[in-house]
Image 1 (cartoon, helix red, strand yellow):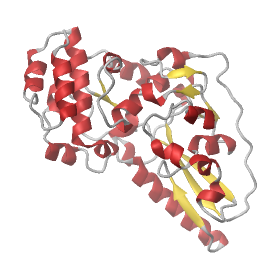
Image 2 (image 1 turned 90 degrees about the horizontal axis):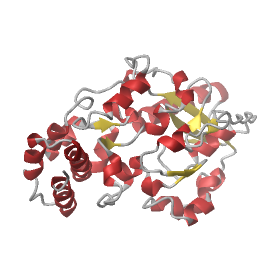
Image 3 (image 1 turned 120 degrees about the vertical axis):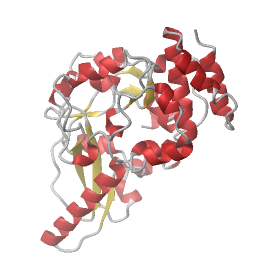
Amino acid sequence: MLAWLSNGFHGEMAYMQTHGLKRARPAELVPGTVSVITVRMDYLPQATPEGWQAVEFARLRRPGEGIVSLYARGRDYHKVLRSRLQKLSERIAAEVGPFGHRVFTDSAPVLEAELATRSGQGWRGKHTLVLNREAGSMFFLGEIYVDLALPPTEAASDHCGSCSACIDVCPTQAIVGPYRLDARRCISYLTIEHAGPIPEDLRPLIGNRIYGCDDCQLVCPWNKFAQRNALPDFDERAGLTGRQLAELFSWTEEEFLSRTEGGPIRRIGHERWLRNVAVAMGNALRLQDDPALRTALQARAQHPSAIVREQVQWALRQE
């Protein structure tokens, strides 16, 4: 982890460096912690068809369509998983009596993937995500830090072998080697965590991905075992899948907040949303001159945000 941070691979995610080794020492984060209970929650929508990976790759070949990462098409997983973890904690307390605990899900300086692998949830894939033999990687992780001494679960062994599909498919070559991700090049980081303009040399590689990227998971052979969700919360919400970029770019801030209410996309705000969609529109224009896209971009040429204006001008220059 320290080598990863020293290389600057965390980009603008300063909290990773701020908390330092506390991330790797649960008892420093939550005093009194003796054990960590890890969980996974599958998130593929119930209606996901067989051969869903091919369906998703096909979306990427329709440049006028905006692509949102699969995990973000339903409710905000932070809220759902945190609630389920709290209910699990209450059930444990009903069996063993009151105990000290704190629940986490991608919400604090917690090394989730490392804890998951050490506790047998799966192994770390070459794309750095956790892989499970029965569930692939299409799941969320959560933790309960407890002051109970629990017997450890055996760690899972690695089953990636010589496969390098995730490394080869990455559009921006963000996976710089097996188990090494440079977040500064990752489309998920660029479209979600990164606050400023997207680096110009990476814009053409983003294609029509407007929130996140699933390529390394879509190509992974283990995801033929990915599981459908057990909760309707993660089913696709209307209005996000199959939508044209010009339509998505036309959303006012009020429409953006309304259409993304309760979902994870809302956290990036309207400015980043427009930034992301503008980049995708420029990439679409490079493949085919579309008057509807140009008209939509020109309508925001004087947007109050300098970031949006610059991305719009870049998009209009593409041909």
